[in-house]
Image (cartoon, rainbow, N blue to C red; front, side, top):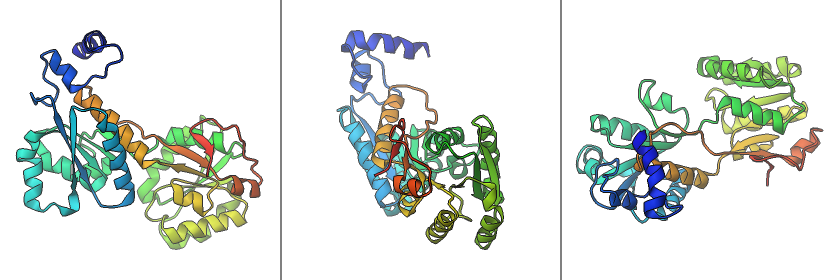
Length: 323
């Protein structure tokens, strides 16, 4: 820690005012970077779970964020195209020596990197991973940018975006998300909100639960829950809620476009750029800790007006009127 503070003091004086803590600057002190490679260039291996648009956009942002640093070179690996031998070579063979950092994009890549590197203990981070503790295991020390917005932050954004809401119905399977409900209920108690539990154990229960408890809430909150969420169910729930004059809160662009009044939205390129900055800090010797993701909150102006919510044009970021 003393060394990091010393470098923070010394870098502007030796490398110039405002100079970033780059690999070349570290070497100018005769100090080897954290990854132990004496070369002035560090290679970053980017391992991608699948060839799908969100991951490709995230990788584009990541490479863009790293491209300004001439000391860093990237190489992208599609996990689906790596056979068992190639994975061993990459994670436990020469790859561990060649790459100063592995970045895992998506849950499959994160699991492969953490399991593949094993005791080699090479530097590694992940992003684009929801609930990483369930992917890597509760005892694994993860490091990265999970796709989880802190529950307290979500409660705060809902309160600011939909100020007339006081009773927030949370639709969830208790076998999967009881912990989320408990956290949300506790966080809401500090925000003048009440979270109403809408427990379902199967998809067929959703309709009856909504009819039975619809009058107990001012808005309906949908979270990632494999029992509750599918494209057809989301469309059905949003339609039924709209007919009952209930605003729906969702967690991506699809919910917004389907008619949710408020949705938490990620810009995947932006997340990639956020990860790039984190990667550079790790390569400079910073401790690796989880960082909440950057996000936006979109208010669906047309839906809100039809529900009588009177959306404002003076929301503070990250809350905005959606496109």
